[in-house]
Length: 343
Image 1: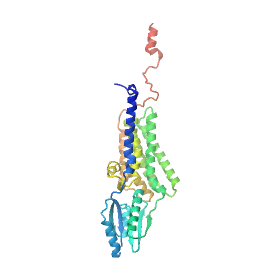
Image 2 (image 1 turned 90 degrees about the vertical axis):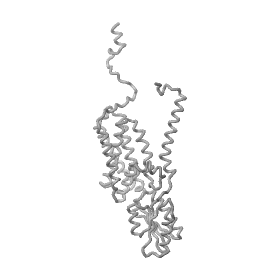
Image 3 (image 1 turned 180 degrees about the vertical axis):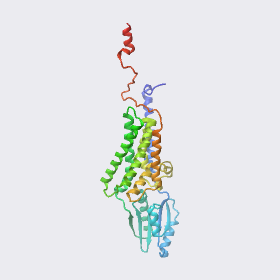
Image 4 (image 1 turned 135 degrees about the horizontal axis):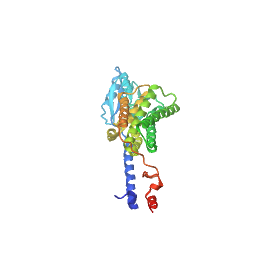
C-alpha cells in the first residue's frame, strides 16, 4: 500500500485542494447557508380586539387573519387572551387594535429574531390600516439578556471541548476516573466563567441557584458527550465535535419559523444548543425551563456517562516525536552489539 507521503506531489496538491473545497462546502451549507436562506414561514402572530370593539376594528382584524399569507400564521382574540399566548410564546407578537390607535405588544422572553420579525410585520399591518402604532415590550431584555443564553451554551461547549481534547492528547494513560475528574473540573470552571461574564455584561441578570444549576447541567451534558466520543474515537472525534461549535449556534440563534424548512428539519430539530439556549432565556427572564429543556441535557449527560463507563481498552496516544518503543533498553541487547561481542 502506497503511503500518502510517497505519492507524487502534484497528486497530493490536488487531493488536499479537493479536501479543502469539500470542508468549505459543508461548512458553508451548514453555517452561512442558514442565514442566507432565512425567510418567514408561518411566523405566529396575533391580532387583539376587545369584545365591545366597533365593527370597523373587527373588520380590520378579520381581514388580517384571512389574508392567507404563508409567511405569517394569524390568531384573533381578545387582548387578555393574546397576551397570555405571548407569555407562553405561542405567538411572537400581538397587534392590539383600539379606536384611533394600535399597540404592538412584544416580549423579551421570545427569541430575539422572532421578536424582530414580529415587530416589522405588525408595524406594517398597523400602518396599512392607517393607525399609528406604539410599541410595548413585556418583560424587556437588555442586550446582554438577549445575547447571554446562546453565548453561554456556546462557551460551555467550547470550554469542555478544549479541555477534553487537550486531556486526550496529553494524558499517557487516559483512564475513566481521570476523565471524570477532568469533566467535573471543566464543568465547574466553565460555569464560573459564564457566570462571571454574565455578571460583567449585565449585573441585573439573575444568577441564583436555578440558573447556576441549569448551567452545570448543560455544561456536564456537553462535557460528558464530548468525553465519551473522545474516548471512543480519540482525536478523530474532533471532526464531529468541532464543526458543531460553528453549526449549532447559528441554527439555535434563529426562531424556527425563520429557518428554511430543510434546515429546520435537519439541524434545528435535534441540536441540543436550542434547548439549552431557550432554557437559559426563560431563567434569565424569571421563568423556568420547560420539560424538554430539562430532559434533553439530562439525557445527554446520562448517555455520555454510560458510554464513558462501558469497559473497553483505552487507546494509547501517539507519541509526539514519532519514536516507537521497541522494548530494548540496554545497548548490549541490540543486534549490532551482539555481533560485536560474538566477534
